[in-house]
Length: 110
Image 1 (cartoon, helix red, strand yellow):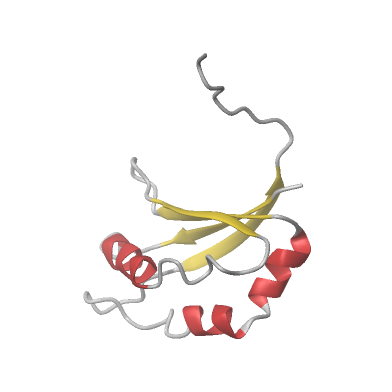
Image 2: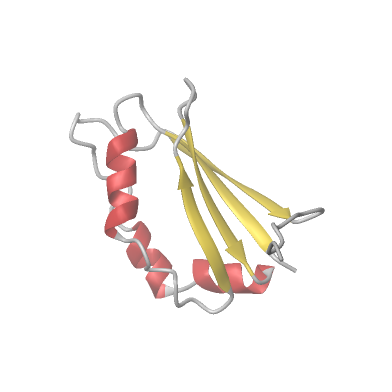
């Protein structure tokens, strides 16, 4: 069963582009992790300041293995570096965990 982890990251008003830049710089770093199924960084389209990092995992054990890995530590090193405007890139973050209760995918038209 797919496990979904959402890291809700609150960023200062002027730091969103820097957050996206940092994620882009390490894009693909998790791709070869056992059990990894997908990733998206979601930018808010309203006046919210929470960006969502959505990852999908085969199971909880796969996610926990990634969190305990040296690759995870390396990818998150320097996360507290200041942004170009001088302040931190993130104010806070909160990890949410979900599994899929109901889903839908488009079928191929025949």
